[in-house]
Length: 163
Image 1 (cartoon, helix red, strand yellow):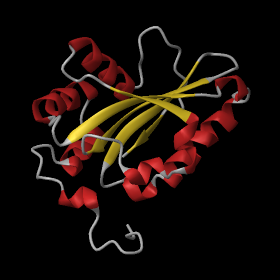
Image 2: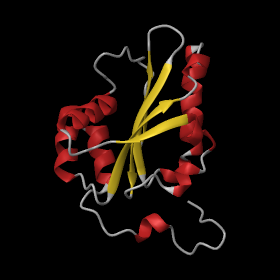
Image 3: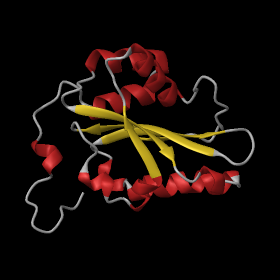
Image 4: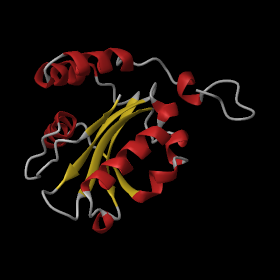
């Protein structure tokens, strides 16, 4: 991705090497049943090299048309294009009827949300909450988001993965 004016290197490339290789994780996720992917992920997850965040759309009452709700997620992913190397996540459309709720779960390189995510136009439309990955219940919730099947939620089949 292009560097900002005055940048010689991407700050995320300067972070210490992590035992979790993002490309290997994305291949594992894409080519294995989720149960196998999840096992690999939790065996290799590095909380010092990555952070996981839940996000909830602030304006769900405006999500009255399903295809438009889906398009807003596509737009977010397009604007996140420069983060493919440093991020992974899923966005779910919940509820069987309008208004539809948008919820997501993302992993980012580093212990904070990267600055390049914070300048994405849609970033402020979401409430971001750091996931406590040491908590087994939170790990189970992350797995549900990434498998597209959240307990207690009706998830539209049009859920999306950023990878």
